[in-house]
Length: 155
Image (cartoon, rainbow, N blue to C red; front, side, top):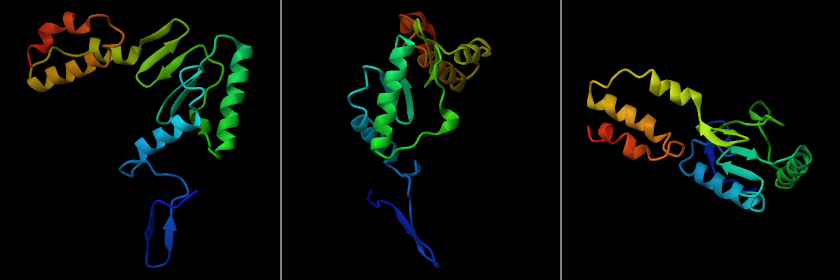
C-alpha cells in the first residue's frame, strides 16, 4: 500500500487511506485493479464495471461457491464492500442502466418511462435529449437506429 495522493495543511500532512474517486485517473486505476484482482472470475461468474459488481450463477449451490470465491479475493487483497450497496440471492436487478433477469438483459423500466413521458421535442436540445435516451436503449432494442432514423435526421 503506497501513498499516491496527499495534501499539506498548516497543522499536518495528510494522505488518503482509500482512493478518492475525485482524482483524475481514479476510475481507470480502480478498473485496472478490479480487472487484475478478479481476472479469473470476470466473464465466467462475475461482471464488473468500476465499482459495480454482479456475481452470476444458475443455481443456489453454485452461487454460494462463487460468492465464496469472490469474498476470498476481496479478503486476499484487503478490499472492502459497501454493505448498503450489496444485495444477495436475487433473481435479477439493476446493473448500470440495464435490468438483469434470469431471461437476460432487459430495458430498465425507469428509462422507458422517461422516454414514454417525454413531450414532443420542440428544440434541437430537446431532440438531443431524446436521442440520448434512445441510444441508452440501443443494446436492447434491435435495429433502433433504423427505427428511430427520422428522429436522428432532425439533428
